[in-house]
Length: 443
View 1 (cartoon, rainbow, N blue to C red):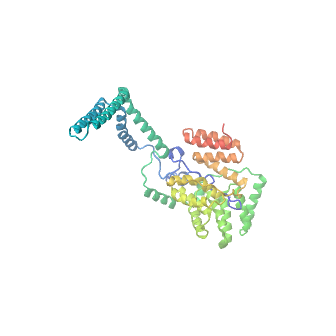
View 2: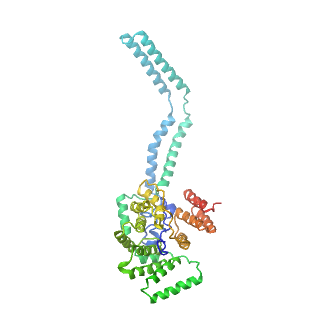
């Protein structure tokens, strides 16, 4: 909620994990449609192209390179010290003794110096012989088994690391191509109306029938009072509380139309909050146009910077998302948009290749969001996860949100369902377990 009860869209704006197969990232598919497959449900990061399961050539190359490195190492480890090596050591010290005798014959060394040198060489020879006696030559079984152990260890370790920080099945994607694809995706987004039509229907709000009747009467009244600014502002607020974000956005836009040139940046942000929420958390071209105009009129607008960062996160430009969100986070001004930026910036920084640590905040919590607004946001997140799925971090956020609202039964139910959904991912279960512990429902 920015002002007057406007719901901040993207409250669930968490990032997806780097493994697209495990997290169900939605990607572009012209046959299925834009909204259902392009972005993840919370407006987080996307996969730049459809993920296909394993490339045989890639894995054969990995296997061959691993063998190329591992086999010489394994052979050296399994060979051990040979008798020929011991003989070479003895020959080396014998040559030194002979060299001392030649130096005495040439008069380079006197007898005392020669005796001291011979003693030192003999001491080293005895030490070398003692060390050779203590060394155990690997058995034939060890020499044959060791290469297999080393190769298996290297292959397993490489696979584990790649499965964590890589994306199995991805094709080559040079940076220039990725930037071009992101720009094309941003250019070819559907309109606000198309996004709203494709968004999942909001959950019905459990409101008092008398309250619902009053809102319905207010809608009818405003049909006869099209220039009543206060009435449209009131309607926009209550439509948002009922989860009717499309209607709320229309009412907020009516306020801007009536004010015309006197409309403020806050008026625009109220509309943007509702418009993005109505579009299922996506930033449409119409919203982007207003955001850029806001930055011309008010370059320091944190809300505009947050939503532009969200736009770039949704179009696979984490570098630009990180840039916008960093300016929001480091301003350290209490607002819902700052909170959302703080939740997402570390993932954006990681994907952008930047080493960034989230700074501590000295800002007091914003008091602009009341319990009804929080409940609407949580209900919206729950609806999106139920209809379209999401990442483990989003499920964890929902569990924590129910804990904050003291709805422990709902938190426990989500925790139980999440364990089934992410049973195959220990990393995801760890994230969810921590959230369940924070919510007080870990059993």
